Length: 321
Image (cartoon, rainbow, N blue to C red; front, top):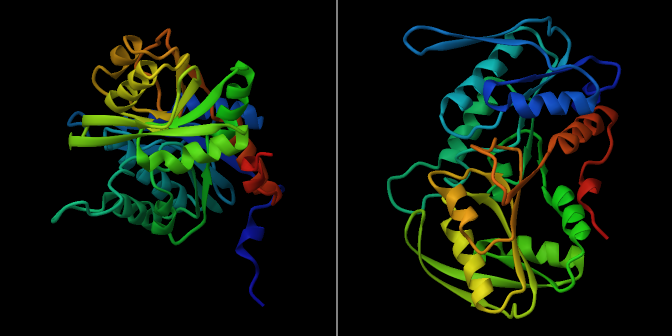
């Protein structure tokens, strides 16, 4: 009889939390929430830009959690792969990659001839490096979980956002999606909060550039919550906010898990019709903005690590009544 591999994750086995350079700010909060100090990692950079990583403590027999989001530059992904390989060669018992933001997730299919499916390539690279499990937050496409032949704990920022939305006590709440692809997300929030939802229909002239946008639904006198998984250039969600106001919305707030905020996105938000944009810390903000509120994922991720060690349900964190 073969033992259950999940039984290897037990409370009496040591666990250690480490981080790549891109996510140290978040990993420190996760480790603190879990109740331990962040493990020591050293990164040595050579004169030509090549770098190497090393763990500065014993890993033998430990369950090792490595926190690293894979937003650009690609060195962040490479550093994660190197840390996983180093942990494997140091005889870690299990290696769990905590990837709050899974980069390259928008390249999850061939949308034109002769292009890569980069999200699948990244999944192959991470798996080959030697991880045993992945923890991530709000994948751009749910089906990316199927790119891995190992357990993926796909977490949702809804467990952070919903309590915050409720605390606002908005009188005429309605959920909204800035595009048809986010309809399912808006519907799920609407069901949890017992509200209606509306949709924006957009057509792109090219990537990162919205040509036209139309509203499907009524927002007159409503307090609108626009939901998305990422804000990149800010063009889509800022345009959606303006359409809400133009159609009589009383207020407009944006909720987004991953604040990529490239180029002048923060400036666009500050000059937009938004009352507030709420994001998480899966990606660090380039600068503080009075219109942007950051909610931390640290307690959620620390809780999931504890639940893994205790064989407790993770899906129950996202069941809202």
